[in-house]
Length: 442
Image (cartoon, rainbow, N blue to C red; front, side, top):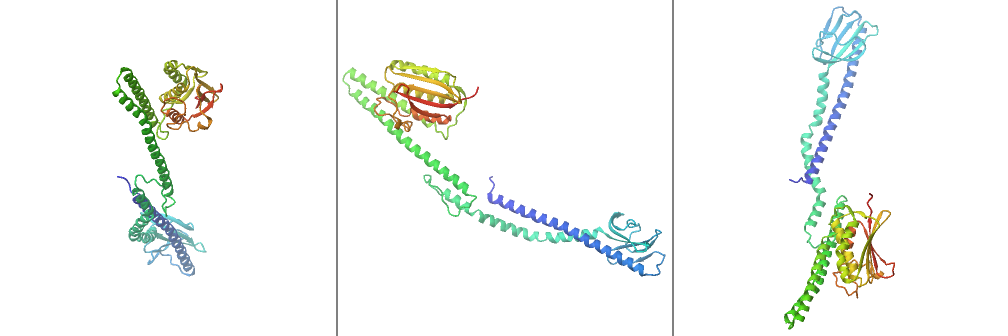
């Protein structure tokens, strides 16, 4: 069961107040005990001085021990210089109270704890000792503490109710905030702007607004992606349907064969487009995680070039590969293979017969450069910042394509923390595609 924030705050506040109250009572008790001790010590001193003065003023002091009745709880013993008892109270123990030195001391006689004050008279003949049981001091201190704790019986429940109501009032803006979020329609992604939002809730409001903004961008992306995909798929499907109708109406084998070949070509184009769309949908930079492992670009590029070599030969394109380094980088081998396949496929596709495509791996400092150089028509400089957009194709190229290859390359590049740039070929024609990776130290 999930804990309630209101209950949690109530518990914290109630326990804190209760502990503070108990701590206050404890310190007050200790302070009262100290003050009571000081006051009663002063009373012992006063009593001893009065008895000493009285005995000094008495000319004839009997040598026989005498007892006086005690009404105050103060115990008295008067001892002579020779160690004989001259006077004591009826509550005094038979044992000697303390020692003969002046001042305060504490002692225990037969299990009773006493506070004792001893004083000699001016002549040094008589030693007056007055004492009290510590029970009296403890009783007074406990009485003070109990009076401090009595209000707890009534105040704690009332205080608990006030804390509960106060916490509820304090959390009211959060409840309004919750209702506002719950009542929102799924497609209502405008930023929250609630009046009276507490400062502590503002980070949550800002985080939700940021989430709404990302969701709005994501939904818009999905809408555009779906719309663009439907539009692009409509063309090859319409062509396939047209060629199927032509084949159905064909009267000779040559016309039928031509229509069927066009159907196969349209099907291949639609299949390629669907494959590219599926790859692109899986490469969302915000959701896709890359299992980065040390990868040698040399092996990935070499395999890709070998796969595209037959296609390049049939078209009459010289496809080459050179490397001055293994190109050790951190990345996902499958994604890097997709990146290479799209770069090489684009280069071979747009390079005319008799042209040349070179793939190069170089290491410069802390970077590994992957270059794909072709002698095709190139990309005008003003179009290079949009060439990686989905379904973008160069006008007048005369080549069929999905327009998704460079979009896929750009996403894989971002997922690997690399950069994608375009440049002119040194020969003055064609295009150089450069992907810069962070190099891994061996």
